[in-house]
Length: 117
Image 1 (cartoon, rainbow, N blue to C red):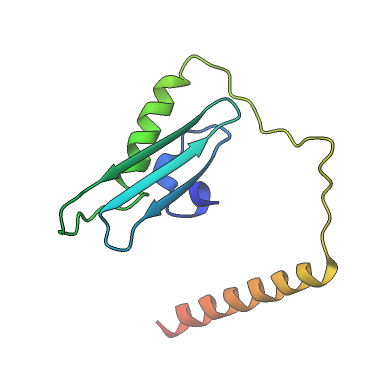
Image 2: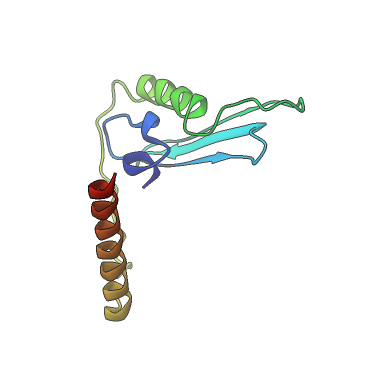
């Protein structure tokens, strides 16, 4: 999740939410789109010059989103996301095993890098 473990951490508002950052390759445009069970908001900033603006979706747009949503939801009760009854969760055994193997390999590499660094 971009908010809890990624580039959107600056948007976290302390209640159930999800979001996605975005930045063009030349950093002329950046955005953060986020939502709670009660509201969705998108923030876009852009620069029409040829210079590198130097911001990404996880910086200024995420900060603006956080400030706006914190105020917009200040006097509201936080709600959790609900899963419709028609949605069924199914995990394919092979895909789950692949994910666990990859996670273990990544952790082993991180541990190795720490001991060598």
